[in-house]
Image 1: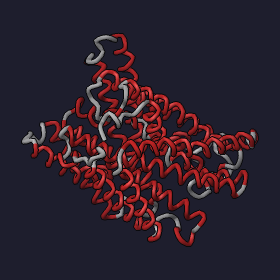
Image 2: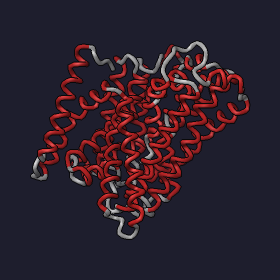
Image 3: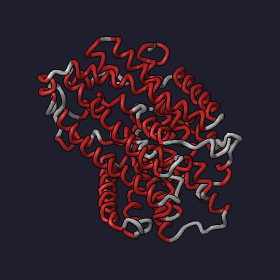
Image 4: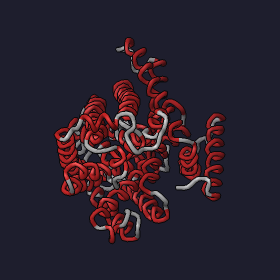
Length: 476
């Protein structure tokens, strides 16, 4: 299949953004937020997250317009702004985060099946659940090998199919909206532990990062865009639509049941929250939506996993063997490696204390580094004036937008806590072997002095992380 046949119009790119963002996270917002805070804290959290991620979306849009020559997406911006090793860390971090996210999707799928067949699937991490997950991973693997065009068509269909139950749920919550119940929950609700407002908001931050992951879906696939300007338009269109849906799914359940009841429902919590309102059929409807949605998100993110390794190999940031493609222009080795690693992570959930939330939070934190570097490059580009020759009046605005995005991502790192930052370095340290391999293929210098310092920080962080895991100070 030729590259021309593979071109994606605006509708396909927008579907990639929506399909990537509307996955597992949105179906877990009611329970995760109700555990952390009431509507007042939720409004503050969404104001912070929405502003920060909107600024990040605007950075992606600006970079797509000002640097159309950079068509590999997220990690390529990090390399352009901060050098080869930082570009590699961005690519590897984005890839491993995507792999962890795909693992989370299958935990959620089997946990959802466990609501109806608990004796078979348990909480989604028993031997049967793991076996079913592995079969699913490899069924999608061979589907994708047939070509990106076929996979993105399926993604467009699935994107429409999974939005429908979410809209129905929102309409039901609106119909049963109880102002008195909403007021009772507003500042915390009855029967919930006392926490400061800051602690309440902080405890929601990683889930907001997780549900926004995918905002860069169009950027990752920019080389397939019919028109370069469609990349930025798809990013903003996807962001606005999905944000409105996520805020509604979070806030409306507070008006239908006590906060403690919402916090106590099983995952996926939207199913439980709707069941509190309309009975068992509501849980069934949402659970079907979860299965369709997560399978669609898994498809989108499996494509992205392979695309990131492929693009990094093409630019010399990963070993060149990852640039291998089949006759359908699918990066075959990158796809095989991605799904093998997903399979290993799925098997590891058998021993995890809380695989569901651990995989969710790890996905969020590993993706923060690429986001930080994109925002940082946005600042550098606007300051340099490169790409702004025809629009110099936009430089000041874009510097402010990118600066706010940088502050937001740093705040997310702080909210995540040291545990997850150390665990990320545990993954980055062995991953750097791929960087050594790629540099040796090119006979290029391994590190600049600054890069050597960054590598040292990664190694020290990894050593502390491994020690914490070995001694039980850090538990997955």
